Image (cartoon, rainbow, N blue to C red):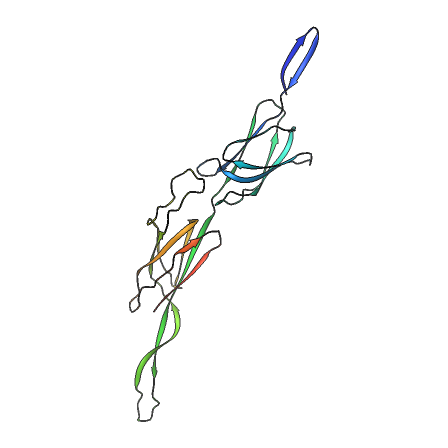
Length: 231
């Protein structure tokens, strides 16, 4: 790991260049360098540990690094990203700058729709006192799943890319997905970027009014359940 050797008056001077490591924290898809990640670099024999936060540039470490096996762990992920798995690697005894890259994947969410409609039964208002029943009104007595109902999912606001550099994933008003409820009245939209969405019932089932649905915010991996009822 010698940087250079100098011989002067029969005295040999050896200057060692410290081991240098470049750490890049990037989006796994766009490869944009990310800021706001808290990382911990530890030597696996317990002799070295350093915690640092990325700033959107390559982080260079050279203080007290020695050859051996290390683990790079993400303790806090940047906003909009899932924490990366720990990365185990080896630092060599060399004066050449070494590099390690830790990739983040975006957090994606899910919207699950449960589509139901009121079931109507005929209820007689008078008892059989004249030899027949008189039916005057229909009364809702329950809910049943509605299949074959078409939905369109829109971006209710601009959905920006969390790397802070790439173009919007969706612009406000863009169609994100379409789908149809199954025999159980269920429909799932998955792999959704974090953001605010608008769900529209494209056509109401026969005999029902189209449901009005409030904007839906997807802010984590936890599925958002939306109950949509037709009257």
